[in-house]
Image 1 (cartoon, rainbow, N blue to C red):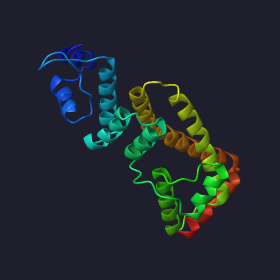
Image 2 (image 1 turned 90 degrees about the vertical axis):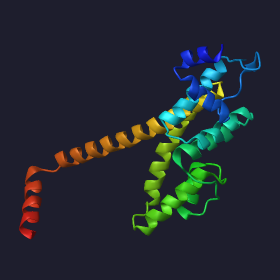
Image 3 (image 1 turned 30 degrees about the horizontal axis):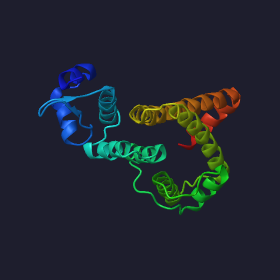
Image 4 (image 1 turned 45 degrees about the vertical axis):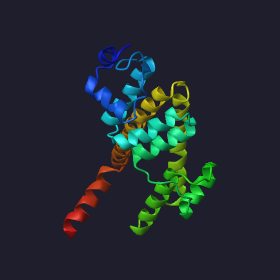
Length: 218
């Protein structure tokens, strides 16, 4: 298909497609003449990936280029996923583990003890919690890490079924954003529901005495 047809198929203006070509996000088409090229379904998939990373994940052109360059260079799925995670979640650069709690949870779950951006971000967060005086007890960290390990298995098993790397990146990019929000909202509902259940399990007389005690101390 030619540029106008590619624009019609994807719903993206010709000017935007030309911009993607100039920026190296979209591979060039097969030359037909000095001014015309032929494009195929792979170009449409790449445009969909770019639109997803821009519209859903709000990535910059440079961030998208870092991801698409890995796809075009034939990088492994692992490298592409690590780059995608780093860019989408703003995790920083890969660093070795340093926080004792992070070391403990990696060993507990049997996760590979290798420098990654995710590991560095976890350690930085655990250290900040320590600084604020809200360190996570080992038993709680065990529960949290077990839960997210199960979630990761579901997410990555589903993603692994995609053969096309552009489709994989688009799917995972949306999933990183939407599933993260889903987990946070499920957690909020679970905490609210747990609080309601606890409140209902306390006898009315006990709640009344507790309320009276609070009022008299104010």
